[in-house]
Every structure is written in structure tokens, then in C-alpha cells.
Amino acid sequence: MKITVIGAGNMGGALVKGWTKAGIAADLTASAHTQKTLDRLAEACPGITVTLDNKKAIEGADGVVLAVKPWLVEQVIAEIMPELKDKLLVSVAAGIRHDRIDVYAMPNIAAEFGESMTFIEEAKHAEKAAMLFERVGQCKVVPQRLMDAGMMMAGCGIAYVMRFIRAMMEGGVEMGFYPDEAKQIAMQTIQGAVTLLRQTGLHPEAAIDKVTTPGGITIKGLNELEHAAFNSAVIRCLKAGLK
Ligand SMILES: NC(=O)c1ccc[n+]([C@@H]2O[C@H](COP(=O)([O-])OP(=O)(O)OC[C@H]3O[C@@H](n4cnc5c(N)ncnc54)[C@H](OP(=O)(O)O)[C@@H]3O)[C@@H](O)[C@H]2O)c1
Picture 1 (cartoon, rainbow, N blue to C red):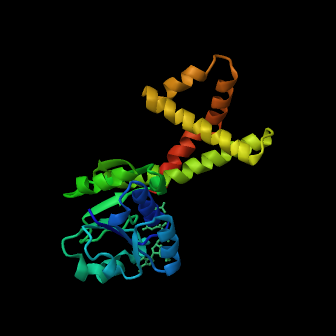
Picture 2: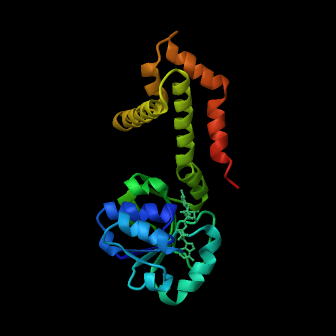
Picture 3: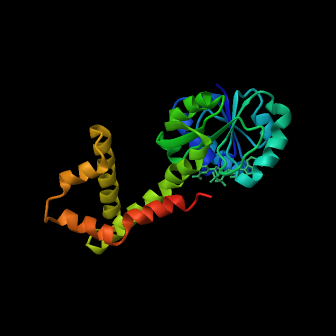
């Protein structure tokens, strides 16, 4: 399947890099607004085709992924319409709907490393699009009513996890680690927690029980999080972007 990504910036570029790593560079074309962006991408992704011309970019493509800023979607669709014909048009632009878009997808930038959590809205060609996004991570096809929730948990969620990592680092530095050490410790601890949940299938609270001695130090820290309304803050954070 030949794919064109229009708007190879943070998100579009991450998809192109992820798909390149998945071995489909020869079937990829990317466009952007400036040559500088394309030069950088072409260097990182040997074998892809790049062009500043959106209409030329979609020639011969089976699928087109729109990854421009939301306010440019309408203009870019109008521009490529003559060449679009029956090509599958997938949009990753947050919150923008258009009659011509076949599939709405919400990936995140970990797509670059094959670790996106992508949401795809139920539609006629959703499964076809899902097969593509499964090459850069995990993918869930969901009803429209869950797309915004998916965006908050995964698209934006990656930023919230970064904040948690930063908070752990700040605590670590205050206790005597250098920032780089604190970052390594935070990342490996989070990776360990994720692997543990993946491998065991445990509910997080059951995993917490395994490391929490009654009257011990872990529960002291956990209860501090409760006093600071950590759960509530995370829930409110995730719901903040819902309309
Ligand atoms: N960033 C995320 O984590 C994320 C996650 C999910 C969805 N999204 C969605 O992805 C879209 C892009 O966001 P972003 O953060 O990747 O923005 P971005 O980094 O600014 O990327 C947008 C890209 O579009 C290019 N562009 C601008 N005008 C264009 C045109 N007329 N034709 C072709 N390309 C054009 C820009 O080219 P130049 O670089 O040359 O200026 C840039 O590379 C948004 O709609 C957003 O909602 C983003």
C-alpha cells in the first residue's frame, strides 16, 4: 500500500520515521511546507520520497494521511481534491471533521519508535487504516464518542507521563541524584512497572499490594499522594480537554 503523509512535522514525521523502521520506506511519500523539514526527514528516512507539492505527493498513493495543523485541513483537502479520487483519506488532525475524510485516527509521537497508542474511529475503512497504524504501535478501533477520550489518554497522555517523569526527577535530585541519573532511574522504574503489568496482567492495585508492607515506607508515600489528591488530579487532567 503506497502512503503519502501530508505535513511531515512532529506527528507526520514520527509516522514516516516509524513506518520507515517498519520497512516500508519505498512506499512512502511525505510533503511539508518547507524544504528544510523535508531534507531533515529524507536524511532520517532513506528510501522515502519527499516533495513540497501536495498534489504531486499523492500521485499513485493508495492512502493519504493528513497531518497538517487543524486549521489547514480544509485548505489542503481543497488543494489535493482533483488528485484524491478514491484514495483512502486518513486525518490525524485533532477535532476537525470533513465530509471527504474516510478515517479519523489519533496516534501519538511514539509512533517514531513503533510505540504509538493509536485510536481509530469506527468507519467503513477503519480496519484497513488500523493495519497501517499497527505497524507503528498498538491500535484501537473505537466509536466516535470515545475518540476524544482516546486523544486525552494517549495523544496528550504522553505529555502527562513526561510530567510524571519530571516530577520523579525533581524528587530524585532533591534527594541527591544528578538529573541524568534521576531520569534514568525514573524511566527504568516506569518501564519496570509497565512490563510487570504486561507480563502478569495484574490490576495496578494488586501489583501495589506486592510492594507495600503494612506499616512500611511505600504506604507512607502512597498516602502522601492520596493527601495531595493525585488520583483526582490525573482524572481531572484527562477530562480537561473534553468538550
Ligand atoms: N504532535 C502530536 O503529538 C499530535 C498527536 C496527534 C495528532 N496530532 C495532529 O497532527 C497535526 C500536526 O501537528 P504537529 O504537532 O505535527 O504540527 P507540526 O509539527 O507543526 O507539523 C505540521 C507540518 O505541516 C506542514 N505543513 C504546513 N503547511 C502545509 C501545507 N500547506 N502542505 C503540506 N504540509 C504543510 C509543516 O511543514 P514545515 O515543517 O515545513 O513548516 C509541518 O511539517 C495536527 O492536526 C495535530 O492535531 C498531533
